[in-house]
Length: 164
Image (tube, rainbow, N blue to C red; front, side):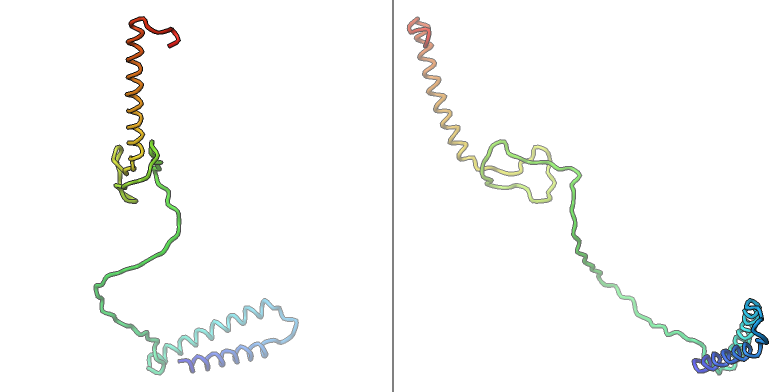
């Protein structure tokens, strides 16, 4: 097939050269007329080549273009595909969680990404220092209450001055 195509191409080129060499009678001929005559010759030659190729294929002298086909049996198996991406994720709702009382975290009850509800206990703060402060303030309250009761008793008895 390849050998026949090469021969056909060489023959076509030779015919075109002969036609152009013999066909140009003078240098004054119109280039448009030359172009149209060459196109006509080309179309007739293409038609002759196509008919010869069909004839040779019918006789079996030219092998038809065959394509090789491969078969693979389909098997069921797992498909895993990984993709690494970089980016930024913005939450639809963002809430700042802060403590009203400062302290050290003793225990966290939720993990990152867990769904939480309003009022749910998220973490525990070490409140030992706060408990000591409360006990100290309760002691001061007892002393202040006792002092108030004493002064009120004296005032009710009209003992003491206005400044007190």
